[in-house]
Length: 336
Image (cartoon, helix red, strand yellow):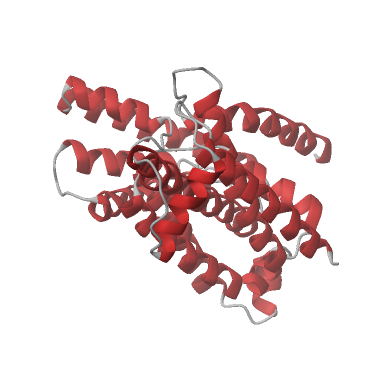
């Protein structure tokens, strides 16, 4: 079995186990028999005996939440792979580059000012904010001179600017109840997601995954620089615009549903690269699977760490991501 095959098998087992934990564990315990009966009833139209309350917990609350967590984790991991390849920067990811902050600003603006209603409208606002934030970071980093560290510094400046804009919008326009809900959501929350959210996140993920796999060889060429990619027949400008727009779309969709979740796009691609190598066809598939499993496990931990409380999922991902970020910084120091 190849390295990718072994990794996919291990990732599939981990994702299955994580999903089982997500469905079975919580404030109200559900037995495997009740979960399987609910799935059989819902998917195959059977009429097995299941308590209606537990049926609702399994199907409407926990399973929909797990599916959205999978989509969010896979989307953010793919964004990390693409941004690291296009920018040739191992620290690039939507959260550190300010794209998540910009998407949050756009989504909050739509929510607070009631510019529209529904997940699609909020996602459109998040998309506009993500593109604006990426444009800001690109202009600032280009003006400051090229270099990996300048891109990150520009991303930090963009994050602070758009986080400040979000805080201004919330404090000046939102009610006390809206403020509490938005601030919790901004830290990353899967508490309010249901099947309509999965219906939005899953198609966007599949489109993003398909396009990235189609462009995998172009991303391989970008690893040798833009001039080398152009000499190999890659339309550099077109591929860059296409994939950067795609990362903005994936990030905006995730942020509009679960909030700004950091470090997934940073940690997962590096961990996956260690197992499957740098070829982007394998890396994109492996990272999507690993990101999905990681987010489901993070959601399970967010519900179980403190009895009777649910931590923002961004807290869990940061606890794993911040040490990994420190290790990457230390390794990049050694290469300079």
